[in-house]
Length: 508
Image (cartoon, rainbow, N blue to C red; front, top):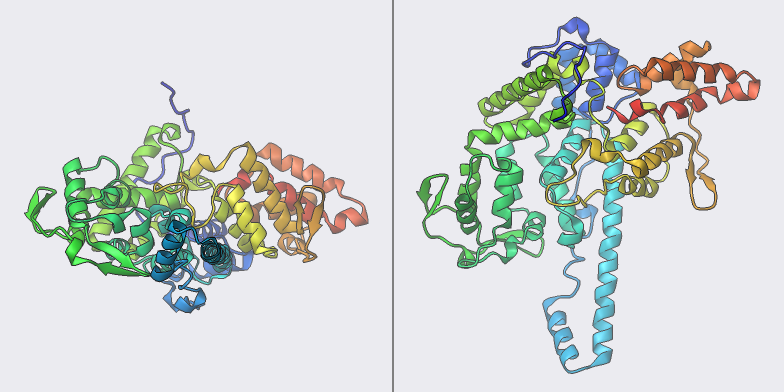
């Protein structure tokens, strides 16, 4: 059995005691902006340091006072699906049966055109959300929307309705840092989730177990935590009749099993809401959710690679988060506020300990370095190539995250997308293209002329933790070699391009 190597660093604080105010420096502010959002510019970092930790965390978590572009149902077309209405569908069935080829061709062409329009709208939806993450003045709101998208995972390929995916995205944003119990009750009414997990096919006498199973295994309690197969079967009965009509939730009482059920040892004529509340009342719920939040915001290092003292510190921090969540009646903002104020969150052991997901990598490069956005369609495609296609998680478990983001193929794309954002150049099959928008890397260098000072400045604004000394020395040698007038003009940009290729750049 392999064992984690000894870690020379002291164990992080084992609870959520506050970070002393005097330790909230530029590096800590940069850490907060990267983890609770998608990074920030040097000016934003300085502004948070000036505020102090309490006001800074308050600004990040209590973001309601910050401006935000509204989300309207009119932003996208809700009437693309169904592709054919009921009368047209019946006509198509009849025409196929009676071999009326002209009618079949006309209706199939209309259906294919509607499908193509829905796919085009989905492509627009991906660009729209990526742009919101880049431009938002409420980064935690979008970061939590992304978290819920991976937690309550549903994929557009199965749902086959881009507006349902838009509607679900808005649901996650509405409850981003709100009440988890309220969110769960809305998720079991969400048409995209109902369609994805086949609950629209669930009937009295023929319950479909998919939604009930995933509620307990993946959404509320965690696999094998305090429930039985009988709880799933009875929960599926409770959820019968929960379906949708067109784009809206519908409860079909004629399809609901209103008989008595025993769930978590309690007997009653439970419905789907009752089933969700019974699951939420289990103590395992708070710890399961807080464990996922800790991995997402604090440290995604696998257990096997964490020293025992660090695992114990993490476990006690998660316990403290879970206790706070229960005390707050499942309100998330108090838990996140306490976490982001804690010494545990800022400890060295938890810096540079989360691998940037593809979306995080792209959005943080733009927001932290201040690069041009370039073409959103190219950035969406790059995220897909790196393993994170928005609105298409690989399965109901969502993205694995962590080290699953990194392999020889994705690392190549990660390096190229950073170069594209810095320079506008992208590697196509035959050539490199440049969109013409220039990025001023000299502004990040803040006037540093000495090669060592230049490198240190660029490393400080780019990385979550200091670079390996040997890599820093290589960068200094490179910067010093750019001595001609032409080379010096592009020295900061060239050095920054090398920094984005470092292993350390993949970490937040």
